[in-house]
Amino acid sequence: MTHSTKNDNLTLVIGGTGKTGRRVADRLTSQGRPVRIGSRKGERPFVWEDPGTWGPALDGVGSAYVTYYPDLAFPGASETIAEFSQFAVAHGTRRLVLLSGRGEEGAVASEDSLKKSGADWTVVRCDWFNQNFSESFFLEPVLAGELALPTGECVEPFVDADDIADVAVAALTDDRHIHATYELSGPRLLSFRDVADELSAATGRTITHIPVSSDDYRAALVEAGQPAEFADLFAIILDGRNASLVNGVQEVLDREPRDFSAYARDTAATGVWNA
Image (cartoon, rainbow, N blue to C red; front, side, top):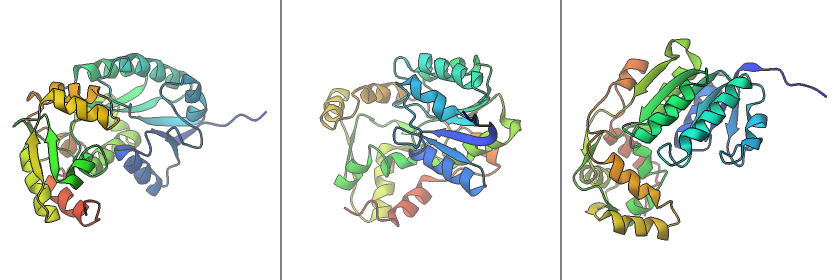
């Protein structure tokens, strides 16, 4: 029986096919660093609900980018993160970079779980991604021309997934970021009405923001096969707690974060919003 040797350069990217994970994996690969994709359909499947998949996925791995689905604010997340991070450290995977939520009390419990594991940890806190409008649950509404959301007039500092990935890769590859917590945002506060205007300008189509009640949105989520709890996240996150700019991108990368207008322009050019 052969035993694999540990490769400190080998990184497990959990959620490696998702919005940030895919970008992290691409960046590490382009730096010549070996990557293992942690997903249900990975070569070695990784499933949060099945701890039996964790060992094979972590075999020989020196560091891991940890994203949790559906969200760290969901019940049971911190217990799972505690179990996983302890398991990872015992398995020889010391470097853990956690993608966390900004302003989410539930997420802080998961951060604390990770820190108690004895890992060389970094926490990267983010709020709404620009890419939610092109690679996630807001794509269909954008294509339909109506962002019907329970957001009212709240403003958010939307952050770009490319900036998140750049920060995560820096944290995975540079020891200076061990035991640091970074909060990331974009450079501007935007309401969802502003977002609709930006998307309209970028696509040349009319995209309208329509405020709806939380109950109506919950019903729409269930109909679309999405977790109804996402409606609760809107209520938690959109009470103004994150309506401020932070400088994690500048701190780590020594540059300004990408603006929503640049994201909208570049994404429109890909054709993903051509209805």
